[in-house]
Image (cartoon, rainbow, N blue to C red; front, side, top):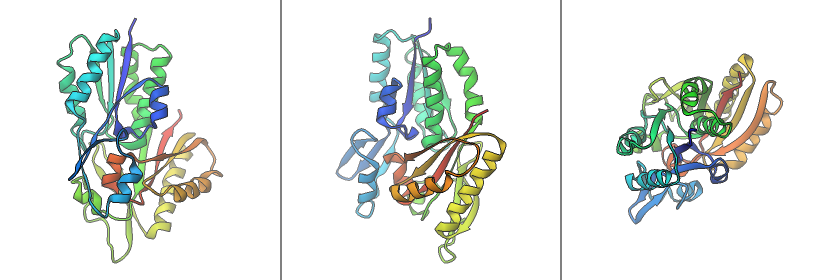
Length: 281
């Protein structure tokens, strides 16, 4: 019988409580300041990053090979036969390739590394579905076959107050040139089929950008029932207000709030607000 382990990077935005409950192995990205390096979600919180952005914008980097090696060795010692790794988009990070290469040195573990082509809670939703399938006793091959279908029904959108942090982090993708500070234009951003940021539409001001997010959600809800998460970067009160405004919409199966992980917060900056949407087919 397959004994399957699930590995996710910390960009998935799952809470540490959920990660523990679902027996998921967390591989933290790294956040580096001039005074030292921190493991994402382990040694540093998103709020700590937001509170210090004016003093210093840290750099982010891949999970360490040493951390991954420790996980893989422990899995071998615990008798795991298979590994599924769910990763942040390869268009935004080298994490996918790093995990894939490291697993090649562990032939005892039959593995599949899945590039979600997304990030944040949308990536986390993929991981949650895999964790549930493992708990249900599905085989490794069954889960691997289901992954593209799971991913197809998930999308995320977000709006930000400024492109400053995406630009500094080199994560601008195809969003460049879409915001006009003078006109107070705010982009609504998602990722394309290559897993790179691009602008879906623009809105004038914060109120209109939130209205655009709601419109995009309504389009999804018109197609099928959906599970919905409100995403935020250091603006919990605003996220709660946004969530309340969505409660009257038809076809919402569940509604929750998710905070952007520390490493992602570096690039989005304070004030990020968004949606993760999973169609329930």
